[in-house]
Amino acid sequence: MKKVVAILALLALGLALGSCGSSTPTNAITTSTTGNWEAQLTGGTGQASQLNFVTAFNVTDTTGISNEPLSITGFGFINAGKCFVNGTNGSTEAGAATLITSSTGSVSGSLTFVVTSSTSSNVLTLNTSPSGGVSGTSNGTTTTTGTLSNGIAWGTWTLTGAQGDPSCQGTGNFIMCQNTATCTHP
Image (tube, rainbow, N blue to C red; front, side, top):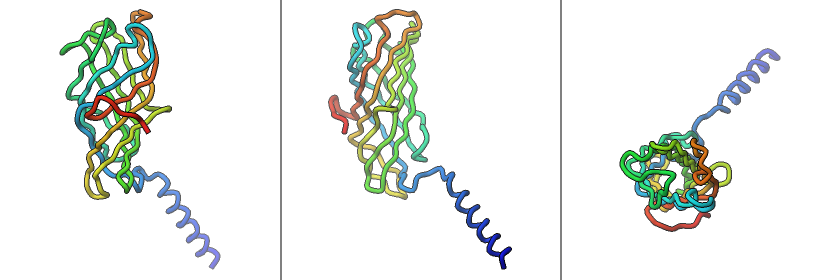
């Protein structure tokens, strides 16, 4: 009898430990986003303070916990200055996002966006971690993919210049607004 109880206890422990590594939160709903996002950067000095831009990207987060790559479909600086050349081949852009939607439709998550100059090796990095985030609402359900609306991403930015040009180096804060020029983060 003691052996049966011990075996049942081990089986229960194994089942409990096996469920600890679950990769999808129970409240994660598949979320996608599209549209234009306008980034407003504050801080920095000189040329490093003039890097506001508009971008368009698509992303679908199917897991709710890992960084999904952004499919960037458009990008342009509003005021590039000397740190970046504006135009078709002036820079390359990449990024990733995690969009977690609760069962009530509230979205939270993270975003990283990196712009690398094609001519000067300057790199602008926007990151919502650790002091920012992503918020908005989604119309998704537990069985359908929702679309993010009223999206806001906020955090910090850094600009590093491979040439050592001090006017193309700096740090500050940013806010990105989905389909609008201005917004405030929660």
